Length: 200
Length: 200
Image 1 (cartoon, rainbow over the protein chains, first blue to last red):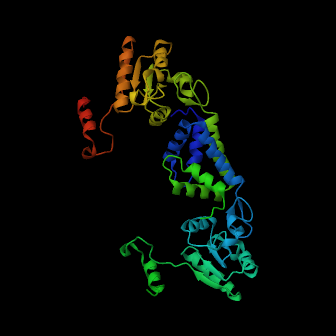
Image 2 (tube, one colour):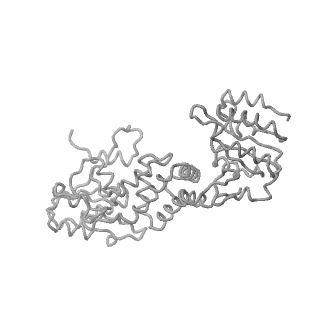
Image 3 (cartoon, each protein chain N blue to C red):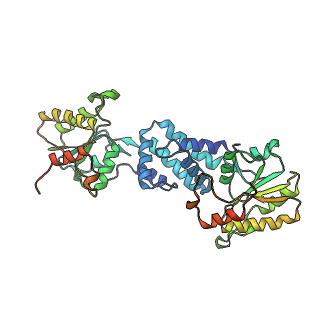
C-alpha cells in the first residue's frame, strides 16, 4: 500500500483513539472531514482546543465550568439545602438532564479504590465537609455514586464522616430500571429492589 | 437542565455532526477528551487542521496528496501501463489496501449524475484523455466505479470515449463477494455473476 497523504494517516491515527471509534470509523470520519467545507473542520478543531484550554473546574463543587464558581453554585435558586455527591463531572451532566434535582452538587473527582491506590485523601471529601460546616445551610446530602463495590465503600465512608454533622444522608434508589422486564434483571439488582421496597 | 460549560456544549454540537456519531456518542467523546491529558486533544485538533490546510490534490491523477504530484504518480515502479479510474480519492485508499493493483490511478472527482446536475464536463475526464494520449504509455484502462446506475452510465460513457485510443478498457469484476453464502445474495448480483462467469 502506498500512502499519498501522511496528514490523512495522522488524522486517522488520532481519530482512532477516540472511544467507540475503530480504525474503520476513523477512516470514514477523516475522509468525511476532507470532503467537507473547510469551515466545519476548523470549527471542530477549535471546539476541541477550547475544551482543553478554556474549561476549568469550579473550586466549590469540583464540576467542570467555564468560570469559577460555576453557574450552579452561583445560582441562588439552587440553594435549597440539598447537596448531591457524585463521582465525576459527567454524572452532574447526566443528573441535570433529568431536571429532577434542584440543589447543588459536589464532585468527588474519583472514588475510593485501594486497588488503584486512591484513598479518601485524593478525593474532594474535605471540601465536602467544609461546605456542610459552612454557610450553605445544607440539611441533606444525597449520595449518587455508582452501585458497584467502590461506590458502596465510598458511600459508607462518607456516611460515617457525616454523622458528626446535623444533616440527613440519603442515597438515590437502586432497583429495577424503568422500561425493562424482570426476566432481564440480574439477581443483585433484584435482591436490592426487594430489600429497598417501599409502601405502595 | 443547567449548563456549566458552553465550551463542552459547543464541542458536543460539533462532534455530533461527524458521520456515525449521534449526540450520545458526541457527549461520550467530549467527556473523554476532557478527562484525557491535554496533549492528545491538541494533537487531534492539530491533525484535523492539517487535514484541511495541508492536504492538496495531485494535478495528474486527482488523488489527495501532501504534495503535487502524489507519491503514486511520482513512483516510476508504478508506470506499468495500467490506469485505474475511480470515483473519489477514498476509492484509491480502499484499492491500495488490497496491494493488488500496481499501476496508477485517475480520480474522476465524482460520477455522471443528471439528477444532481453533474455532467461529464464536471469530472476529470478530459484530464484522463490527456494522460492516455500523453507520455505515460498507457495500454490498459481499468474502470473501477461503483456498480450502481450512475457508475454504470459513467463507465459506458468513458468506454465510448476511449474507443479512439489504442488502449484496452477493462472493468473490475462484479459478482458474489468472498465469504458470503449464495442465499444472502441479491438477484441483480447473482444475475451478473452468471453473465460474467469465466472458465474454471
